[in-house]
Image 1: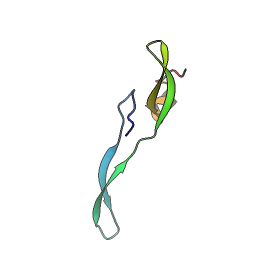
Image 2: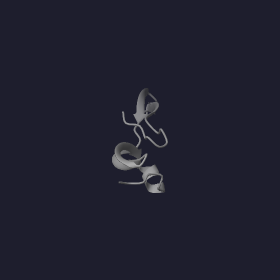
Image 3: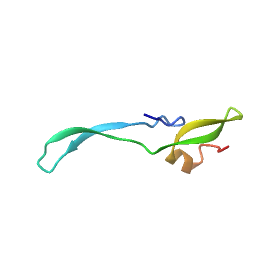
Image 4: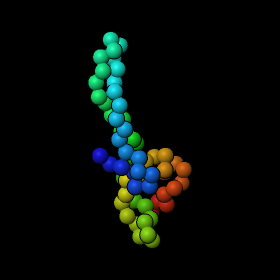
Length: 61
């Protein structure tokens, strides 16, 4: 699964609980996009979460 290169945000695991309280495993996938960004002075394709994109932590190429 893709992980954010800036903040290392990735997949989170938990338990899904139905109405009858039967429990099963589930996962939450973070909103990670593949973007072209400036890394060490050159453009590179990296995975970045949308919260890092929105806050301006990434300089787009």
